[in-house]
Structures are given as structure tokens and as C-alpha cells.
Image 1 (cartoon, rainbow, N blue to C red):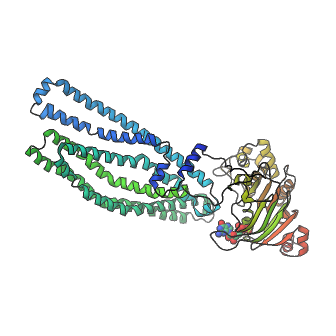
Image 2: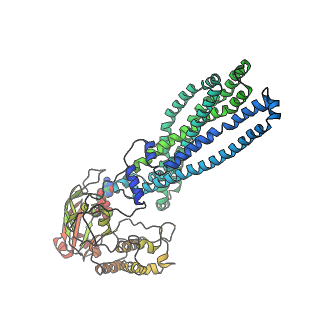
Length: 611
Ligand code: GTP
Ligand code: MG
């Protein structure tokens, strides 16, 4: 076979997005740099939005400026009466300018809001898609590491904190800086002495805010953990509600959730109190500004260093210094929330699965012949050193049926999970058609395998949609054909809406055996070259099982079958039966050979047939 370039799976992301993402996957530890990477394509409009913020804040000063002009020239100055009679046109011009600029400012604010919303939603959409894509491509290890509730928090609450950073925090910072800078400059130009007096509060302010930041940072990290913990309790409880009901543990679960909820609430209150401890000082400082302005400004006015108009402008603008001061706590809080949340998002954003496509995968078109070989395969899970599989060697020839039996926990599921590369062997090789499974792309490899897993999961979709999950192009006739193979057609036909009946969450409930049969039909519907059934008929009655066994022998496409089962009735017609004990194959052969051997299998036959 030839080597080719790597092929990629179907994706929710466009190729352009994927390339952009690849660029921004240049790992950075700085969450602001990370955010900047993800703003590609939005930076221009964001820059305009920031300019807009600067502009409309600067425009806030225009009204007081014109008020000062009006007061000095037409109302309070020595030439006021003269100006008012002789330069009435200028008086109206000033008024018109004031009104016109105010309207202009409102328009800018409006457009600015639109721009911030577009950018933040655009980035949110992009990162959310990227994260989902990332999560989809992770291997089993990832799913064993992260709890579902925690992952859900990352793609919802945490991402929203990121959006909030773009849409609100940056804007507030720009607004505060713009106001402070513009007012400060204006004050200095008017009267630098009075401006300096007002600035006297700044050093105290900086010290306070710095101390607040140090104190509140760990609070937000804790808050984030508590939220994820609470979400995990809720998610596990909702998906496992049958167990809760079966054991009548509702009160216990409500109590458990209440503990999590209370914990989250208390941490929230504590975080809020952290700011409240600083609030009186900040508020006092903010309130000190008008006092300074009144005292110092008054003195300057008396001394003739300040005109009445300038005094009016100063007092009309102290808010432009005091308000940003009051906002500082909020901004810092939100910034820390972003910090804690973005770290969590970045953890997933940069997560790389261990099991990936090879650099030079084998070119594979069409079907596998279906030759499966295990060569001296040993395996243990990364999180424990206990060997789960020890020196497994066997071959399943194309078209053969190999049955795997063994007591619970002996490693059957672990063994079959090595074929689609859910995990990699610690030692030895798993081969399909003479090539190590790690030489194929995951898509080619898994595309050739039909797997019915031990725990059946159906989607909230129609039965038709569930069966056609692996190949959505197949016709209804084919869906029915595969349902017949798995002896499911009869019960499906009796359902209220037949194949269109919605199953899964909030849909019609199905029995364990019915679910297993749909899962088998789903595995068959991809017409796999290799069919793996993990205890798929355990909940099906003997009669139906016989029917399924018969259909599996008569499949319309060539297929090698690996069947994990506990019943002799399932395994006895297999070409080869492997008996596993403690991770090793201890017996192998056909039904007759193994009975003759008089080992574990022979015992099983005696037990199950009563012979
Ligand atoms: P049944 O399905 O009950 O018949 O068992 P099985 O033969 O399919 O056993 P399986 O391969 O699932 O498990 C074999 C051993 O691996 C058991 O001792 C499990 O405890 C262990 N095991 C299974 N999954 C994991 C896992 O994700 N992590 C770790 N550390 N151990 C696992
Ligand atoms: Mg199992």
C-alpha cells in the first residue's frame, strides 16, 4: 500500500477556521495573548469599537466645555450682557453644537455597543466551536480525566466570562482610562494646580486596588471550582436519576446538591465581601474629590487663579474621575473572573490527544479484508499499573467469527477497545490486514469497524436516525433491513410512530434488550468489515438471540466478527472461542474442542445446559 498525506475527519469547522485555529494553537500561557489570537478577523472592528469608546467618552467633556463657554461669555462674565445682545448668533451656535454633539455621541455609543456585541459573540462562537471540535477529537484518557459537569462548565459559563471580557471589561477599562485621561488633560490645561490637588488621591487608590486584586484572585479561582463541582453534581444526578429513584435517594441527593449550592453561594458572598471591605475607602476617596474641588477650587477662585466658568467645568466633571474609581472594583472582579475562567478554557483549547493519526498514514480505500491479529499484546491503563491484558496472541481470519468469553473484569472489553485504537497496547501489536492499526488514519480505521458497546447509548432522535447514525445516507429500506438482522423490526413496527418514534431522553422508553438490538442494527448499518459486539445480546431472550445469530451468519456483506458473550448458545457456532482469565487467554478452540479439553469452557457448558 502507498503512503499518503494525512486525511481529516468531518468537522464542524471550515478549513479556513481550522487553519486560523492551527495558527493560534501556538501555545501561550498569557490569557490576553490567547484572546488576541482568537480575535483574528475581528481585530479591525474591535479597534474601531475602542476608538469609538475613546471618542464618546471624550465627547462627554464637550458639554461641560460648552457650558463653561456659555457661562463665561453669556451669563456670568463681565461682558455677558453685551455678548448676549450683540452675539446672540454665537450663543445659539454654542447651544446647537452642544445638542448636535450630544446626538452624535448617542449614535457613536449605539454603534459601539453593536460592534462590541458582534466581536464578542463572534469570538465566543468561534472558540466554542473550536472547543467542541477539540473535545470530540480527544481520546478515552481525556474523558476519564475530565468530569462531564466540569467540561460543560468550560464550554458554557467559562466561555461566557471570556465573552464578557471582550464586550464589557475591556470597554470599561478603555472608558475609565479615556475619561481619566481626557478629564485629567483638560484639568491640567485649565488649572494644573487644582488638577494636582485632585490627583492627590491616586497613590492611595493604587495601593487599595492592588491589595484588593491580590486578595480576590484566589477567590475567583475557588468560585470557579465550586461552580464546576455544583454542575457536576447536577449533571450526574440528572443522567443517573433512575438509580436515585431505585434507591429512593432523592432526599440524600437534594441534600448533596444543597451542600454544593450553599458552598457556591457562600463563596460568592465571600468574594463580594472582599470588595465590600474596600468599598468604604474607595467611596470615601471618590467623595473626597468634590470636597477638594470645593476647598482648593474656592481658594483659587478667590485668589483669581480660576474663572467662574472653569470652576463650573471642574465641578461638572469631578464625576468623570470619581466614577471610574468606583468602577475599579467591578472591573478587577470581572478581570479575575476572566482569568480563572480563561485558564480552564485554555486547558481544553490546548489539550492534545495521545491517540492521533499517523504522520504518513496508509492509503486505504474501500473495505478491509478483515484479518485481525493480536501479537503478544499486553496492556494496562495509564492511571493504574495493574496489567489488564497479558501476552494476548490470536488471529481472526477474514469472515471468521471469534467468540470471547471469560468472567467479569477479565479484560474482554479492554481487549476489543484496542482494535479501534481507543487505547494503545503497552506491548505488542494489533494488526488489521497485516498492518498495525496505528498506521491507518483513525477515520479509515474506525470507519471499517462496527461496534456495539457494552453500555448502550441511544441519541434523542428517531429510531431511524439512531440506526443510520454511522451513515446518514442510507435509505429507510436499508434501515429496516438492518433492523431485521438484529431482530428489531418487529417491535419497532409496533411502536406508535414506527421508525420515526423518538427514543432516548424524553422519548419513548425502550427495554434493555430493545436498546441492544437497535445498537446492533446501528453497528451493522455501516456495513463494517469488522463487527465487534460487546455483550450485545445479553439482555435478549434465547429465541430472539437465535434469530440474531442466524442473521449474523447470513449478512449481505463480508465481515469478521468478534463477539463477547456469556452464553454458550451465542458462542458455540463460532469458528474459534477464546477463554480469558485474569487478562490472559487460557483456552482456545472450537466448541467441541473445548468441551473435550474439560476446562473452564466445559464447566460453563455443564452449568448452562445442565448436562
Ligand atoms: P465485563 O464487561 O464485566 O464482563 O468485564 P470485562 O472483561 O469487559 O473487563 P474490562 O476489560 O472492562 O476490565 C478489565 C479490568 O480493567 C478491570 O479490572 C477493570 O477494573 C479495569 N478497567 C476497565 N476500565 C478501566 C479504566 O478506564 N481505567 C482503569 N484504570 N481500569 C479500568
Ligand atoms: Mg466488558
